Length: 358
Image (cartoon, rainbow, N blue to C red):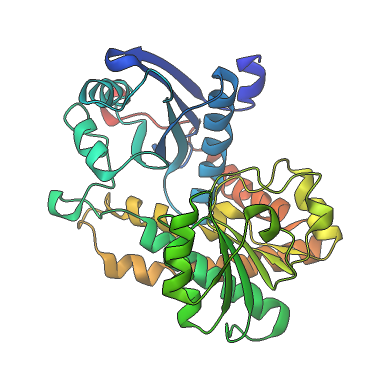
């Protein structure tokens, strides 16, 4: 991999190593709108290329997510190499916190896969630029609940756009991944009367959620081929690829996972098949909105976040309408909307610097 070629417009990529076996990548895609905010992933990456690619793709999506949501924040992401011989420890987490602190506020770290609020608390010992802490520590808490709520509103918006009604009653929805977001999403959809089928790599977890929501459990391979109203990916990314896209039998793809499509061209192929795609970085933005609210001058207010949840369906309808009018994919419409906002401030500054560096 040529890192500079893969950066493709990224402002900065920081590679760090340190105590506890720390090896991490912090990618800052854009700080045009403000300091870059993004989650931290702790995963057993196959190799360096996979980890770097994950950081670059996710940070780019965070820029678009913040821009589409109207937030004055930039896009970034961090990944920590886990796996054999590397365990999460105080030394590793504090060393990562030092890496974050070295960026002087250009990157604000929050939770993502493999990282808990307890881990953030350890990182906070070394950096002031950690958000998403537990409420008793002045944070807004884990953002999975709000993300799931936003995705449920987004699914309703998709249904209303196609059918003129946002009712979930009798709708068949397939959910891949019933973790922090997917399990809560299943609860919202079941409460609305949806018929659910769920899958997860953890069979026991899938069965627990299914029992609570009256859902059916199937394998992940079978789930993606079901004839359903909505296919909702809520686990890992890159799940809808060139081999799968032509075999989908859903009307809508709408879920909380990041990077659901393996390549940009997949969005065009979904559009060609008449499958409505809710761009992931738009429908799952409420978790980001929650964490960004911690930066509000008056302090965090969850009621304000719940009010902002209406941005999700409103923005999706704008994107669907733009896609139809321009005859482009919904992903293309969302990216163009984000780029329009970035272009509007590009004449003011090229990137964000902390006040003492200006």
